[in-house]
Image (cartoon, rainbow, N blue to C red):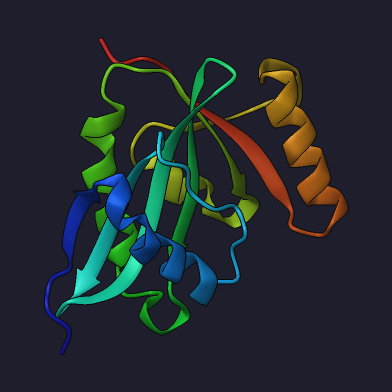
Length: 144
């Protein structure tokens, strides 16, 4: 039986741990020092990571990754719930896989049309879709 994950915001000096989760998930998006990175660990073992980044003046949720051996155990949902207050009253976008609409919807993200997204995100989603990832654009309105 797995213990509850420990979820924490890491300092940039510790982002190599997030990079190790990303490498285990074959995610090449990386993390920059000015991103806000979160790590979920089980018994001290890194299991999942996500980051919030400011791109072209908008907040973007990126790199929500759970190592394959820890998937489908609710860890991603717990990470997302932890992330929710950090998004706070900010508007936030994401490019996500189509099958995860309800997952991201659990903290208020809604599917949007490409015309409603900033150009760079529309281009990113188009690139992912061209490469077979079946992605959609999602947006969370600022909370009042």
